[in-house]
Length: 220
Image (cartoon, rainbow, N blue to C red; front, side, top):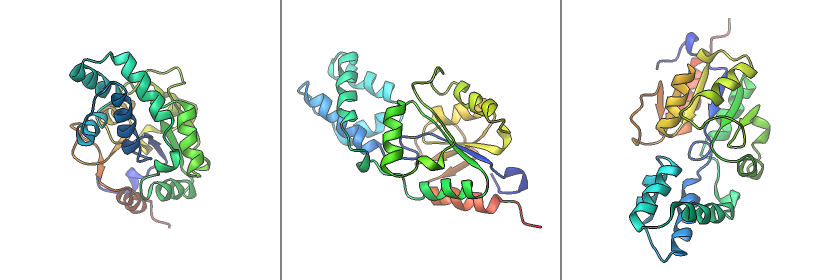
């Protein structure tokens, strides 16, 4: 996507884990801790690849690989992850700057995540980011999970947002698919682990910041 007047973004709709916050190392260590309780060990690299797709898929694959009850593994994983220090799950470089820039331009930031509100708020508070977000949609809200667009559509309706001036920022195909189905622009943040085409693809959030700056309408 080339920046221009028609591309000016007034709202960013963020995924949380893996997009705003670098949570995957803590997720992987929580899974390794859970697996250890079953007498099993798995490589960090393998687990990282699984969790970068979806958590549910990761748990299913790991359970099948090691013949562990998926419900039991998921429960122990969740307990271990809940103990993870949010301070050790920092915002990605330039995440704060992107959010602050959009607010300074009169725009808004939102989060749509599969995390619980308690888990998300722990991260936001630990890193002093709460004031940069207008609203949060979490697992506690009555919407189906992404890639279903219902949660995003609810935000668009609630805040009377023009979907053409909104951008979904995520690190997974399911994020991009939800944004596309809701009619928003999309930004993929990460490496090459996706198949869904995004309007903008970045490997660092500084690139998103520069894109937003370039796409700002000129002052007359």
